[in-house]
Image 1 (cartoon, rainbow, N blue to C red):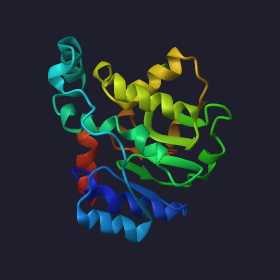
Image 2 (cartoon, rainbow, N blue to C red; image 1 turned 180 degrees about the vertical axis):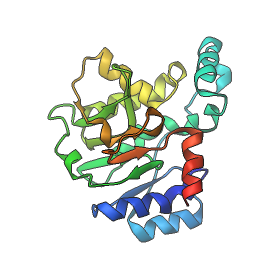
Image 3 (cartoon, rainbow, N blue to C red; image 1 turned 90 degrees about the horizontal axis):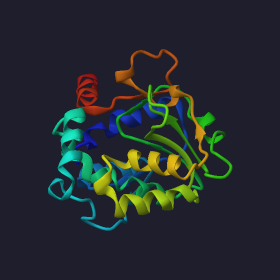
Image 4 (cartoon, rainbow, N blue to C red; image 1 turned 120 degrees about the vertical axis):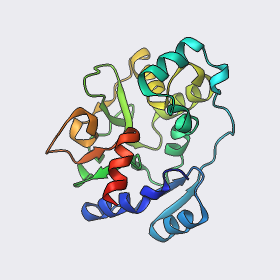
Length: 218
C-alpha cells in the first residue's frame, strides 16, 4: 500500500502514449486502490508463498552492513516485496508482456519493446548504467513462458539472504549461467539519477528521492 498513491500518476502517463491492456498485480492494495485497478484493467491478486524472505537478523552482517552503506537503512522497508516480482511476472494474463515498476514515467510508445524479446530466453531488459554486468528489473519485456522466470523465482525463494534484491538475483543467473537476453536501449529504463536523457521513453524515478519528485508533480 505504501506506493499505491502513484497509480493514477502512472496510468495518466501510460495512457497518453499507449493503448495496450494493463494487468495490475496486487501486492497488498487497499480496497480503494483495488477497485480503481479493476475499473481500468485486469486486477490480479498475487499468488505466492508467504514469509519466505529472510529478515535482516538472519542475513550475514557483512552483507547487511554493505547494503546499508550503499543504499541506506530504509532499504528494509521495501526489500521483502522485491523478491515477489518473478511470481508477479508469471501471473500475467498475456502471452507477451512488459513489466513496469510503478515509479516509471512513460513518455512514449512501448510498442518497440515487444519486438526485442529474445528468441530463446524470451526476455529483454536494460543494463544498469555504468555497470556492465548488472541488469535493472524495473522494465522487462518478456514471454510468460520464459525459461528464465522459473530460475529467477526459485533463486529468489531459496537464496534471497545472499542478494540485496530481485534484480541482483536475475543478474546473477544471467551471468553465471551465461544466458543470452536481449539488451534494451537505455532510453527504455532511464534511471533519473544517471543524468538527463531527452530521448528517454521510460524515466525511472528510483529510490526515495525519485518518489519525492513524483509527489511534487501530483
